[in-house]
Length: 142
Image (cartoon, rainbow, N blue to C red):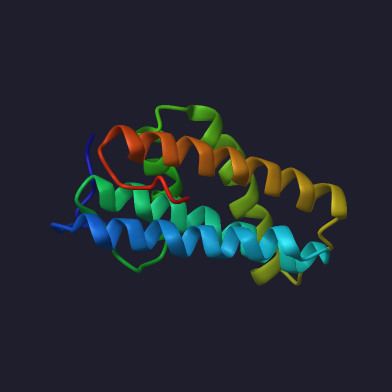
């Protein structure tokens, strides 16, 4: 797996740092689960999705650099790490929706969309947890 130096920097993370990234992703997922407002739910789904991706990238010994296109690169790597192209397709749909909402004058996030995105996020959580468990991370409390 190739990590482009423009977007990723090689770093030796401790197990605790990676576990902390995972905790932050879960925190945002739980906020998304609690809120019924589709816009709030959507924002926290997106944040959590990126944070799960950052966690997986860190588990490979890389830190993402903050620059134009870095969210897209995180989602691409998450899909590669978990060896599942459907992740890229679905996460790109969420990212593009977020970009339209943020940069193109906004859109209304429906309850149905928010629920679909949250359901997808829960799949990402399960896949990420299984992957990290298989790599020896102590995630049994999650």
